[in-house]
Length: 306
Image (cartoon, rainbow, N blue to C red; front, side, top):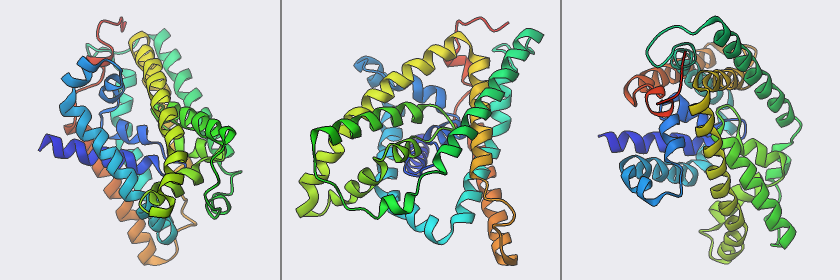
């Protein structure tokens, strides 16, 4: 049962990773596996084997989420964009109580000192400002126009660009609230990757798609390893401040995703949006309670909290 639950969470993370503007690591935070996921990303084969019951279903689910839902998400956003954004907004809202607890309590459950409280507030505000600024960058990109283009021919400069975008996007994926897909869209690579994935199953395009996806895959792997190391270091050195920064990023992403009241038209649309919002909130809140123990017990062990 636990493996199935982790597989479904992995699918949700993979699904979120294909949506520009939605962070896959936000879903990891929502489902309370973020710290364990970051700590599991390593080249240490022994550690990977020890965590196989966690790594295999989550990573397998992520792969399935990208493969299966890359088309489904496109359809949902084409036909139900407002309801879809309300659901993702609900997921973020449901994770807020958990994140607030992580950033405002020490490992032994005590309140933060006044000095540390100030630093936590500053980190939360900084995270909020970062994600709002990042959202403004995304608004300058014409995603529909970019997605209408055909697959380009492979060249060395293009391969380097795809690698760099994969690396940057993977680092962004590790940071909750920042969308790796949106960053790759800004760098002009996202449409190529999204078109290459289904093209793998078209015989005459398989080789061309594989050549375009390979440098991206290498870049993503390198970015995940580097990004995970940075996050692990921050969680050990300053867990409360790190979770405060994540809290700000998450809160900012909710503002960015929320489509607004004006986007709702008619009673049926309003009912559907409220249902999606409630479903997302309930799912995130319930999952954060039952999935994993408090992250500080793992990621911040041995660090000074007072």
